[in-house]
Structures are given as C-alpha cells and as structure tokens.
Length: 318
Image 1 (cartoon, one colour):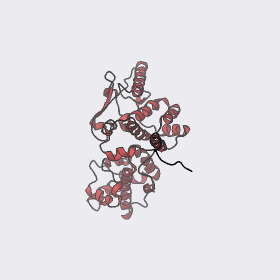
Image 2: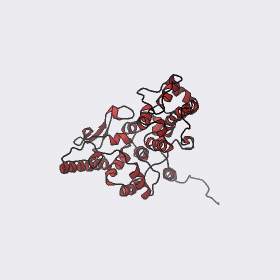
Image 3: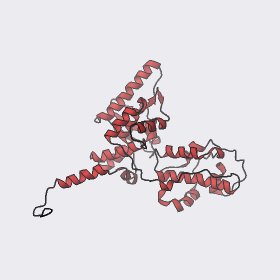
Image 4: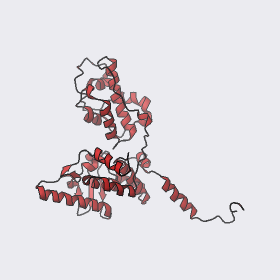
C-alpha cells in the first residue's frame, strides 16, 4: 500500500507488486492529502498530531491483503485511548482512500470494511467517580491498579504513564516530570505530589514494588509501572474484563484523563494551572473534558435554593 499513499500526494503510481509492505514513509503525507480530505472532514480534523507515525506503526509491516476489518477495528480501539474520534476518523479516511485507489487501478479486488465513524460521538462522555475507581481497583490485576489510580489522579495520557521511568521521579522533592519528547504536546511539564497524599501513596507503593523485585531478582526496574519488573506494553484485555466485572463496561483508561480534569476544576484549581498539570495546550479540548453530569446540576440548583425565599412572593396554591 506504500505506493497508493505516496502517489495520492505526488501523482499516478508505477506498477509495483502488491506484496510490498503497506507503506514505509518517514515524512508527512503532504498538503495535497490534507487539503483534499479537509474538504469533507472539515471540523473533524485535529491538527494537533502528525497522523503518519500511528498508521506506520500499526500497518507499516503488513501487506495490503493483511489489513483486515479486525485489524482496523483494533487500531480504532487502541487509538481512541489517546486521540479524539475526529483525529482517528481522519487517519482511517487516509487509509480507506489508499485502498480505493488500489481497487480503482485493479491491483486489489476489494476495500476492507471500515467502521462508520460518523455514527460515533466525537466528544466522548465517559468519566469515573471516586466510587467507580474503588470498584475497579478490586477487579483490576495488581500490576494495573497503580497505573489506573495514577491516571485518575494526574490526568496523564496512556503513553506518558507507560513510558515513565524512575529517572524522572524525585522521591525527595516529591515531584514527577516529563521531558518534552515524551509528551504529546512536546513540552516538558512537572507534577508535584508532596501535598497530594493519594498520589504520593501510589508512587511510594510502586517504588516499594520495584525495590522488592530488584532485591529478589537482581535486575534493575527502570519503569514506574511494570508487570513482573518489565514495562507494561498491553493491558486492553485485562482492562476490559475488569471494567465488565465492576459494572463499568465500555469505560476506557482515557476516561481517567477526563475525570481528573473535572476533579481539578471542582477542586477550584485555576484553569490555566490545571492545563499545565494535565498537559493541554489549548482550551478547546480541555473544556470538553470538564464534563457536567446530573449531580453537578443538582449541586448548582441546591446553591440557588440556599438563597432562600424571595420576600413578598406568593406561595403555590395561595
């Protein structure tokens, strides 16, 4: 599929055997692809990320005939852990366009079935309460409990947590930090936890686990969140099973990010400070994460009720 994506940008392709890998591109697809797709996708397109690495990492080693509806749906589930649906829709639109070009040239017989992203809600509304988190902790395997709590308490993204090493945790000054290349925004940030007992407890437990593992095996534990001393790579199956047992089916790890943002705002943290903690560069996405639920509305009307009766009004039925 390499030639179809590549020549979608630069012109008609020459004949290349379809046994070649999907694509091996080290540069962006180019303005022509973006401009063509933006005509129809418009506001759904997120400009915050370069989509090429995600497609390349998932499909770069596959032949065109190996890209199936199952693999596409797996990509969808994985990407929606860290990207809004509009961004994922844009990525899949490029993939689908490449297949259509191949079929048009007679080098592939069919286009695999793609999910209808337009039927999905782009502003995902899932979030956790403290009670939900407590239920989920019971059901999660031990190696995922700290990861889930850390996500709920900090609003960090999936890969920011999975790639966190002990070299970026200062237990003395009680601060954890990310370097620019390790963040989606490419900007470094810190998260102090000296006065955040819940987060401090999570990090101390992870540190204790790492030291115990190093003592037993003689092997250095480099990452904060591990499974048997090794960095966690994949947890989707265990996560979904735990959510189902806890009665929280359909929740994602990314829902912790939205929940943490909402908790920050409810705690009275100024918006610009909360954005520095969570790593949001723009208000657009951040505001979408500040979810209002029925309890928020109940609390708001209760505050109105506390104002008391208006002097001189007539009661109902009088």
